[in-house]
Amino acid sequence: MSDAVTALVIDDEPDIRELLEITLGRMQIETFSTDSISDAKKILQERDFSICLTDMKLPDGNGLEIVEYIQQHQPRLPVAVITAHGNIDVAIDSMKAGAFDFISKPVDLSTLRNLVSSAIQSTQISGVHPPSEIAITGESPVMQKLNNSIRKLARSQAPVYISGESGAGKELAARSIHHLSPRAHNPFIAVNCGAIPRELLESELFGHVKGSFTGAHQDKPGLFKAAEGGTLFFDEVADLPLDMQVKLLRAIQEKSVRPVGATGEVKTDVRILCATHKNLEDEVSHGRFRQDLFYRLNVIQLNVPALRHRQEDIPPLANQLLFKIAESADMPAPTLAPSALKTLTHYPFPGNVRELENILERAFTLCEGDTINAEDLHLPESSPKPSLSTGGSNGAPDYYHRCLEHNSLDEYLEDIERDILCNTLESCRWNKTQTAKKLGITFRSLRYRLQKLGLDKE
Image (tube, one colour):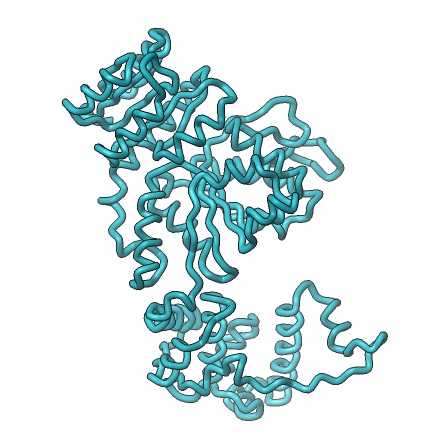
C-alpha cells in the first residue's frame, strides 16, 4: 500500500492498540492511536485518515459517538468498530449509524487485514466507477434517489435488505451494489432460496465433506465459500425454512460456516444482500420468519420502486431492452413507434420490468417490418382469451394434465412450439421462407424462434 495511507486507532487497551499498530504497520499503513473519544475528535480535526478503527467501550463514551461524528464531519472516511465477542447487537447498531464494518475480539488478524483493505479500496470506488455505469436505467426522481443510495451502500459492508415487487429489478440493484463496491473483482453469487430443495439447502449453502451423507463422494465448498471475498445475494429470502434461518443467522453473526459433516467451522468473508417480494415484517409477525434474523438482514433497507411509479423511465428502458433482445438474436433492433411508447407508458405493468421485457420480446418476434406499433404489443387487457377445450379427468382440461408432466408452464409451451416448428420445417423440407409463410409469421420471427429453441442448423 501507499505510504500516504494512514489509520486512526481508538482503543483504551494498550495490548489491542499495539496489536493493531503492528498489523497495520506490516501493511505499510502509518498508524496514529489514542484511548479516548475526546482526543480522537481533536486528531480528526487536525488531519485526514484513510481508515478509522474504534473500540465500542471507551473511558469517556461509546464508540457510536465516533461513528456519528465521522458521518457528520468526514462521511467518506470508513470507520470500523471493534466489539466484544458475541456482541452482535452493538455491531448492528454501529452499521446502522454508518460504520463500514465490524470486527469481534479476540481480533482475527486475517479478518482484520481483509477489512482494512476493503475499507481503503472503498474510498477510491467513486472515481473508478462513473455514475453512468450504474446498471439501473432511469432519470426519474425515485430512480435518481435509488441510484444515489446504491452508490452510498456500495462503500459499506453492512447487510442490505432489498424490497420491491416481483420483476422490479431487486437482483439488478444487488448486482449494482456489488459492481460498485471494493468487492467487484470477486464473485457475485445469487441464490434463489425457494428454488433449492429443502433437503439440499444446508449442503448448497455451507458445503459438505466427503462421506457426510449418501452421495457425498467428494468435498463440496458451498455457496458461502464460492462467494469468498465477494457478495452473496439471497433472493426470496422469506422462503427459507425456519431451521435454515437459524443456521444462516449464526453464519452471519460468526462470519463462519460449518460444512455438513465437518467437525469445525470455516471462516468466511462475504457481504450479505437479500431480497423478497413479500413483506418481511408481516412474515415475522406471522411466525414464518425469525425476528432476530430479520434484524440482522435489515440493517439497511433499499426499496426498488415499481415500474408504474416511474412512468417517465419506460421509453428509455423499453428501447434499451429492445436493443438487448435484438442483439441476442443477432438482428437489427426495430423502432418503437410513438403509439407503442404511449401505450407502454400508460400500461400499469403488474409484472414490472420483467413483464416489459416479455412484452417487447413477443412484439419483436411478431411485428411486421422494422417498426413495433401499439397493436404489436398485444398487452394483456386487449389480448383475446383463448377457448380451452375440456375433457380431462375430474373435469380438468386435457392441457392441464399435459402441463403437469413438465417442470414449468414455459417448458410445456416451448415443447409445443418446438413440435409445431419441427413438423412444419419437415413438411417444407427445411425451407425457412416457405415455413414462415405457412405458419403466418415473418421470416425474422421464425429465425428468432429457431435460435431461441436451438433449432437453427445454420
